[in-house]
Amino acid sequence: MPLDPQVARVLEALSSADVPDPWTIDPAVFRTQVRAMRLAAPGVPIGSVEDRKIPGPGGRIPLRIYAPLECAPGPLPALAFFHGGGFVIGDLDSHDGVCRELANAARCAVVSVDYRLAPEAKFPAAGEDCYAATCWLAENSDELGIDASRIAVGGDSAGGNLAAVTALLARDRRGPRLVHQLLVYPVANCAFDTASYLENANGYYLTREMMRWFWHQYL
Image (tube, rainbow, N blue to C red; front, side):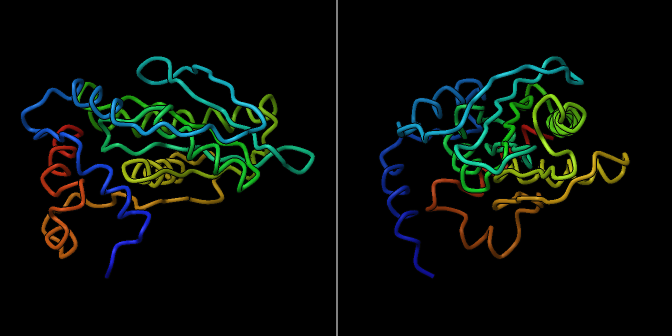
């Protein structure tokens, strides 16, 4: 199957980047290098953006709350969003554009969660932070202008994993009630011997070996 032209352009842009062997680099240094590689993009107009910090199981959790540019009157549906980055990299800024697009397209509030990262905070820290933030969202829905009966969770890659984990925790811990999971290419398995892993082990920036490193840091 040929690559989507947009993906091909992204890979071409990344091909000139000096990607280190993750097994030889400190995770904090890796984060700094990845931040430096971010492509500048114009900010998508949005209704409002607010940064907050809320109590969490391991300290205060930074959040960024987006309101859409256009929405129906009354309380908004809401999406608790968890960024990707292999549980090691990523932050509120790395997925700012995605969250703006989601808020406007779905006409919902988006609450982006800056959960603790590995290896400084290993499993289950990230999942517990995401669950705590989702509980906070439900408990403070009136203040936030959010419809507590229409709360969803979502994320990309490692964030998709965390969204599914949060949904399972909400089920097992009897709340909060969720209406949807938005799982964007979620990392749902840590087996590295599947046909997809073997076929796409190299050549697409994110390698099989890099994924092994990410899981090692998290677990």
